[in-house]
Length: 207
Image 1 (cartoon, rainbow, N blue to C red):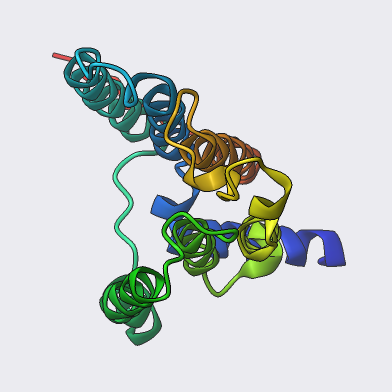
Image 2: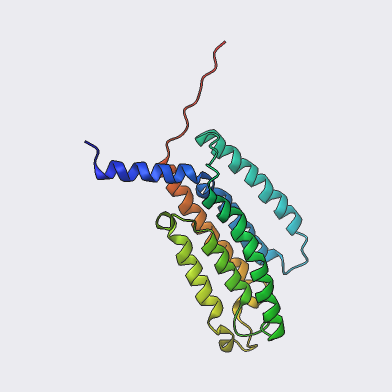
């Protein structure tokens, strides 16, 4: 007789297989590390940025090969919900970001007590959650924390009146915070993947 644990595991396997790309968290880890690197390097002369880009690109290639060798080539189903999430929501995010940035310039919030850029980062984290938020609860939690930190008038606590996320001296707090969040979320996604799916069987070629 099938136990509730077995049924729950089957649901988890189906969910992870359907959205396998979302759980390849080492990609996100590389992106997060790159943002942390930028937090320290971008405010300087910028000479280290180009090598950092090449290093990150190389690491992404290594990570992609690791996932192909371990889990095989799994192609997700192109459902309507997936298309909306992958195409429509990002397209809606772009004009929203432009409107918020324009309003922040109009009302003089670019050096103000709140951070519009931080709030937009929180929206991106919320969009990354996906429909199965129970398996990726770290995304809405991170999004809520980023949004709260961005909208609280923390600038009133600084001598310049500028929100900490808007400081451009190294280490820059916003890319440092966002990069750290992406590293944690990526590791949690990878943990879910390796705990849910077994490695793909290796085929031994014989002459």
